[in-house]
Length: 248
Picture (spheres, rainbow, N blue to C red):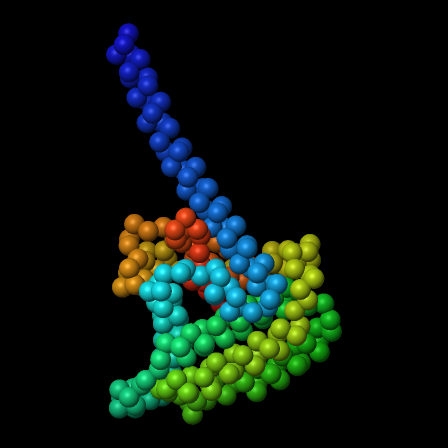
């Protein structure tokens, strides 16, 4: 009889482990989503991504630095095919300028999304003015004479300045009072996901030189046009990275 009791208790214990693990994982996913929502709300309060970067990103300096460098170096190197080999050897871009470009790029994407989610004015006028701003600041970057980017000054004057100019235009067309309204949520639901999220294992490999372990958890959160990659840091859930769910 005692043997039967022990078997029953062992089975109950074994059955409880997967449920407990699932519950903990689900709870942390919900906490990651809540942290993402808080960051987005903060952005709509100030319309400045610098606040999100300062308050909601990982505090680990190595991970934060890795995120900025991975994103910006990929962008900077996208024009390297226009360069001569000796030019690339002389490249000198400091982290501060890459960080400025990263924040400007993020403002550009987030404010463009915010305007599309909240604007309620003359849509034809908005599109016409937006096309003019785009042609002024972004179209020139398609010209090979804008590349390569080799110095901090060039990064500031070309990418950062262009992103900032378009972000400033979009900011003027964001209606903050429309945030999280039924129409806002309807527009978000109509977003078609056309780009897969980054594989979590690949992200871990990219951030491994900055100290990320293969056993670390990265929580994927979908909100609006973006994927958010969230990690737990000192008991809080912080933004590691984000990217676009749509392929333009």
